[in-house]
Image (cartoon, rainbow, N blue to C red; front, side, top):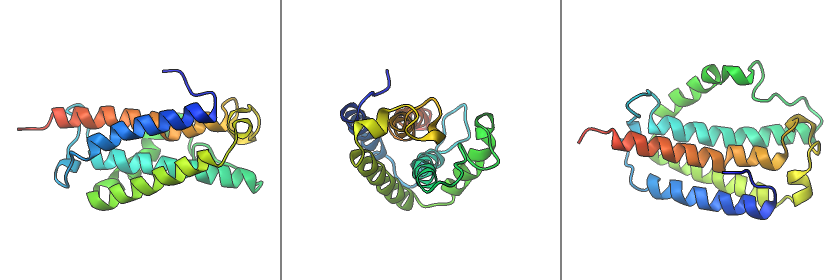
Length: 167
């Protein structure tokens, strides 16, 4: 699927992919939220905690950049090839959080990210170099990676975990 190139398309893909994920999430209860895919130890809770955390990271990067502070992408002390180590405690904390709480945090993060996107114009979202910390990517591409792309991969993982669940 090609990346969105304007705000309207970004909001459309955001809404579409979030609706699909929400439909899947409505089928999951507290016990089911501890399931994982047959080939992975990450639980559904961990996946949702991870997606929520990364939406928040986008806001931190943006605020730091606007304030003229150094922006650590992906995070201070980590490089992109170290995401497994960075994400491990996020997954673990998700496992220790109730499903109801995770869902509430996820919904709040989704609302915040959608509002963030909606408050920006095409130029801010899709001009390369508008924000130095985004490098070759645009702010819109970062927003898509933090939202819709993560919604799609979460939905795929969760459905796989549900299919592999014992009867």
